[in-house]
Amino acid sequence: MKTYGTEPGIPSPARVGISEITVSEGDDTLTSYGLGSCLAIALYDPETEIGGLAHAMLPDGDAAENSDRKPGKYANTAIRALLRRMVENGASYTSVEAKIAGGSDMFEFDSFGDGVGQRNVVAAKDELERLGVPLVAEDVGGETGRTVEFTPGTGALVVRSANESGETRKYD
Image (tube, rainbow, N blue to C red; front, top):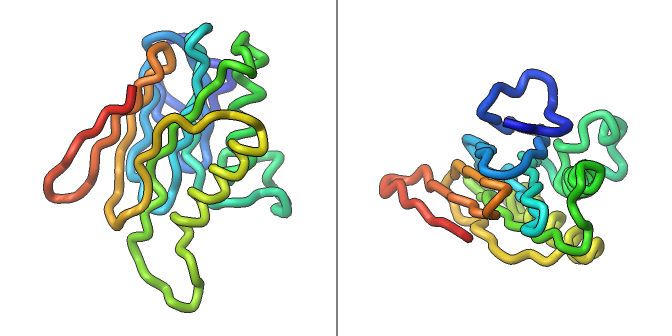
């Protein structure tokens, strides 16, 4: 497995945990478990087969003190960091596409307005639009958790629901 810019402590095959980012290529599989309100952001370049996966916990890191040390923690800074690492390793910025999954609102807190999950989705979509990266698939919202598997070489994103049905969806 050839991974680039892997956060310390990520085993092989690559598990992408909360606030982590991993860039890889080809038939490698990048996996994130336990997405509730967190958002999995998969970026890939179909021409070079370089892609990456982030497991973002919060929507906006621009004002956060540690966003430069832990860019994967926030949806918007995770997208920037993934894109930068991919391009540094040979991806073409103009070919990159995005897929997102997660962003559930599993708990209701009336006093907070939109839940963290929904805010993560909005932040990611806004950042992708700002950077000109097309969002080609999404599996977001609802009230159940998810697990995702992403293959950079094909761009395939497999999403498994954590509900009773255990439904699996694949986005090629």
